[in-house]
Amino acid sequence: MIKLFRNIRKKLAEENKVAPYLRYAIGEIVLVVIGILIALGINNWNQNRNNRTSANIHLETVAQNIEEDLLQLDYMYKFTDTTLSYSSKLKRQFETLDPIDDNTTRYMTYLLLEKTTTPNKSGLETINNSGELPYINKSIQEILLKYYNILDNISKREEISNTFIKNKYEPYFFEHYSYILNIKTNWESVQEYYKEDPRTPKEIDKENFLSDSQLEAMTFGRYFQIKQQHVLYKDAIKVANQLMQKIETNDQGF
Image 1 (cartoon, rainbow, N blue to C red):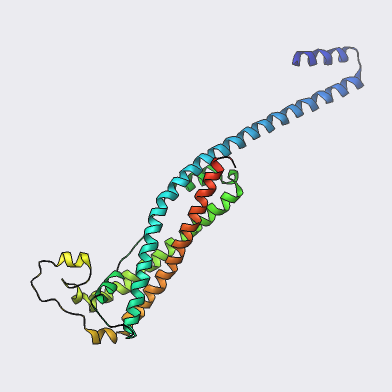
Image 2 (tube, rainbow, N blue to C red; image 1 turned 120 degrees about the vertical axis):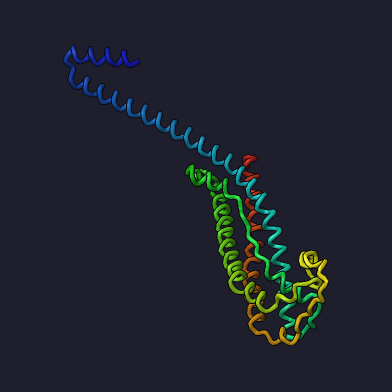
């Protein structure tokens, strides 16, 4: 084909037909440009298709990550639910609405527990690093970003909560109430630790407990912190399931 064009140009030039030669040359250039544009278009189409295919494969990794995350989120939702219940019961005991009983020590020690989620973000990181996010279905993009934004907020709330425990609640507890850790403490791990202790266990000082405004304030602090986390875990579970459904539907080609 190129040889044919060259022969036609040569013939026109030899016959000194300048105008036809120029028109032909311009037409040939236009054809070459069109050919290049078509080739580029095909190449871009193929590249976009490959990017979409790769992005969808990485979405499967995201789905696997979320399945792992849900195990932690479900656990943390139940944990915070129990913590809210115990801090609420302590509040009622401070207010003398409920009597101090054997469970009081259980409530107090439960508030010492630090918990942290460790979500798996390998799928999202791969998508971000490969620049494939724009090739994912728009509705999936929105839920994907919403889900990981909630996880970031959870991480921040957990850090605030755990820092409060380490710097405030735990030091105060061990300074003023370490004596309640004994065989009579209504907590399995504590009872196991002191099961062979022959000493007479001490009971909680009810009068001191009821007048301890600082402990009451810290109990409120733990309640408020956990309440924020509890809501976030619930939201994360809801959005995670929505995202899983979207990815599954996307995989089926709908």
